[in-house]
Image (cartoon, rainbow, N blue to C red):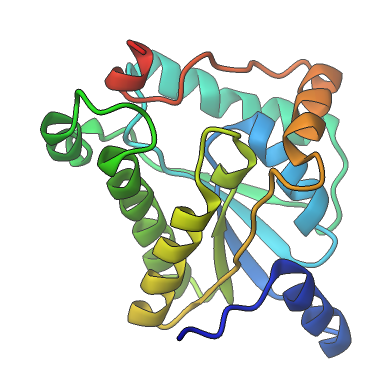
Length: 200
């Protein structure tokens, strides 16, 4: 059985260590990142990674990324989070989309999409000397945090980097993300990202 450390326990360990670890935080959108940064920026040197090849069309991908600049120019977070944007490459998601297009949200398509994005985050984290990787995805009430964390832990064990387990929708995280989105005037998308979710 895996030894899974809760977010609260992990933050206590970090606080006791007196260090400020580097965290590569996969970010699906600025509204979700707004709340997660509120939680994590006091404890980590956070870099947001915008890698979401599932998003269709390209204009939507670019629009969502543009909201990070709005968020970080209006909100004040400790340790000055930075942002990395991956080039738009929907081709890497197409095999997943084609095989599971008709599934409802929350099925195998989503699990494989989680794995695609978290694996990329973990690899970039290792290549660039980050201590942890994590994702903002669990803020959404439509995302299964248990599956997300299982995928993250498996990748972490395989590749040798720490994964930060969390369910950010807890403690009214989703509600807080909505509040912050209104406060900063952030665009809130009406679908997850892929063409299948757009049609649901």
